[in-house]
Image 1 (cartoon, rainbow, N blue to C red):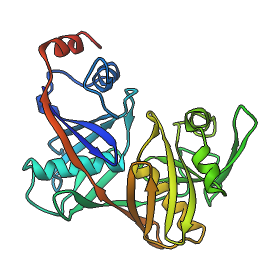
Image 2 (cartoon, rainbow, N blue to C red):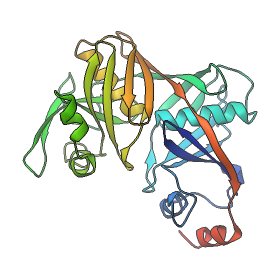
Image 3 (spheres, helix red, strand yellow):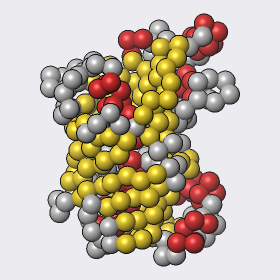
Image 4 (tube, one colour):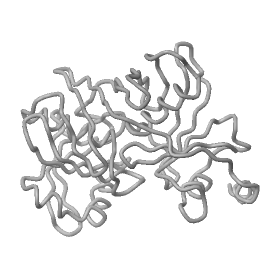
Length: 284
């Protein structure tokens, strides 16, 4: 089983071509492969396969390290796109890939950077079934804290929470706070959570707690959710989002169509050992 490790702003994924797998990926196998001590180690797995519809270069499936399957990941999709380009799946600088969230159309700028046309954000969705038309809501966590948020569906569900003070934002204990919001009853499919504060009309600082992952140095969809919430509150587009792992640029228009621009690079390529493959074969 050949694989490559890629990273984008410190968000690292294992990329595997489906035809190189001796068995199907299951939650147990995904968990083992993503384990940094007993497997390869990563923030998730990107599985690439030939498309099942004309007009696409590949189909992308995204697995979280807890074994769940994500609809979309901005960093993961960017890594997959750059992998496809570098590995000769296409020589075009503009093409389309399939994801659970629908079509993603990238534009390759250079050997590291691309822009993803991510589609249109929505303020209402089945991921927040009791939400108002403007997507604004409020949840109370077990500790009694009331969190006001902006719900957005950007290929996966987002709860963007504005924090008024920068020091307060930096001091938030996301590993303690995040799970209570992610798994709140208001979000039947769980939600990603972005905490952000404006730094300028076109620049925000954001910290991300990602569904199925936990606190992360970077999240493309998380950055997108925070940027769109900022624009809805009067901010300027494009928005530079400052994350722990670096910066991403999100461009949002009046119809909430948005693009995400950033870089992704390979870390290493490898082959799984016979011992690891044997262990994985025994897992359901």
